Image (cartoon, rainbow, N blue to C red):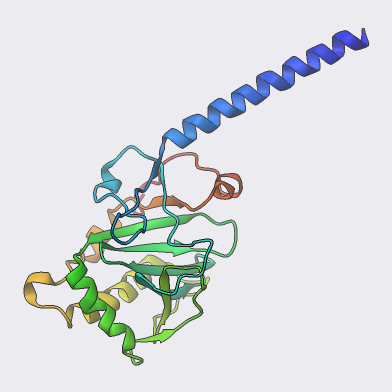
Length: 225
């Protein structure tokens, strides 16, 4: 009898494990893994990601195992108390995108994406020296991105009803500053606030641990829903 029970338990565990593995494969098939740019060796998000059927995207942002003496991009952060984290505008020679970041299990999301050229990036990187605009922040030695805090960013709070509007205003401040250093043909086109709200925020995954602490169930609906 004991042997029979042991066999039954074994098969039950096996069935559950197979079901878990199948579910993991289904989840992974819905996660877009960003390719590596051959020139800059950074992950690049596809331009039409918001129109795809993927539920999330995997995009480790230049965190390497070894020290990175040369940075290939930069990030501008500001705090969001409502989101219990921060918004980050990530800038590299191929694209600009707005995302959230957390030092807790809360999920991270991509809000907006815009493609640029290396020439445009060169112009934008010049503004990193403007201390009236941004302040230098701690940057990990293993990161390919330099970090800055947005100076005089509009702050939200737990009582703020529309923290997305505040996030948009901070984003607009940065883009206006960027455009001041670009000619008309290369200015960055930021959608107006109403169109910004229509973009379906897209969950971002940085590691397998993210799937454990922030399970991906379905694609996020519009922020207007």
